[in-house]
Structure formats: structure tokens, C-alpha cells
Amino acid sequence: MLEAKVGGQLVQAGPDSPEKALCPACGGAVSKRKRCRMDGSVTYFYRHARGVGEGCPLRYDARASVRP
Image (tube, rainbow, N blue to C red; front, side, top):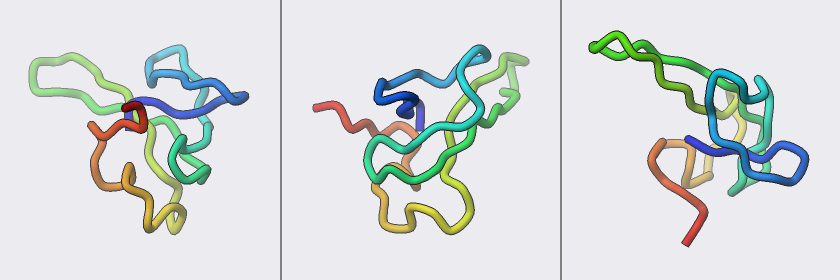
């Protein structure tokens, strides 16, 4: 997911964002990850911890958002 909650506020994943946060949909623990793209750029995202948020709609679709 691209956004997570830290201190009750949504933050976007990026190089300066916190390593640990909470999922905005289910409240489960998430951690920041990064991926190197084929063009050499780096993207950041949050991923659920192992076994957390199995029924969360944001777990399997990184582009999904809780905003309307």
C-alpha cells in the first residue's frame, strides 16, 4: 500500500517516512519496503507483517486506497 497511518495521520511511503506504521483499513502492523524498478528508480511501499491483515482489502492490491 502506498499510505499508512502513523500517529493517527496518513503518511505516504517514501525515503523519509517511518519504517513501522499501521494499515489504515484494518489497523494491522505494516513495515516500509523498497523496490528497484527496471529504469533504476526506487519505489517505496508499506507491506503487512506476516500473518497480519489476512482479510484486509489493501493486503493484495498495493494501488488500493481507503480514500473515496
